[in-house]
Length: 133
Image 1 (cartoon, rainbow, N blue to C red):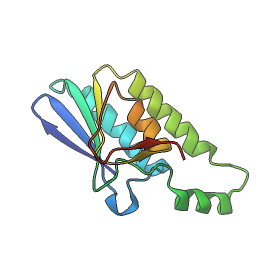
Image 2: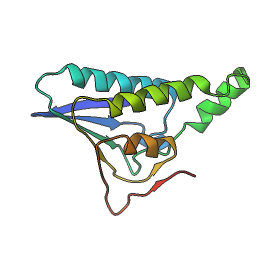
Image 3: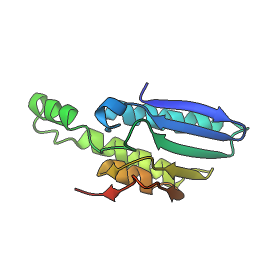
Image 4: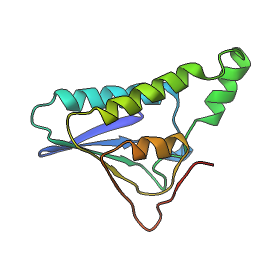
């Protein structure tokens, strides 16, 4: 499961859980993340959400392997479906009724940076960098 949910009292944590691949984002992972947000939104006891990554990265951004495979199978799509899902997720975060904190445990790059910055509060550590390469 890419988006792993844990609860601690009144807070819910969503961990991007693909450390071996830098927690890169693809359509399936974004849909799981979106569902995790919805599950925590419906949980009355949860008053705030923390988003973090596993391993050394928050997220390295777009899953380039999945993107290249998609381009080979449907070159005219141009990744529009993944982009549409990302936009839906970002809008859901911006409109979310509970506060969201991005706890950056490492680099947040490209679409991973967009995901991190859509939170209400962004907290980093010494290893954190945010960039749009």
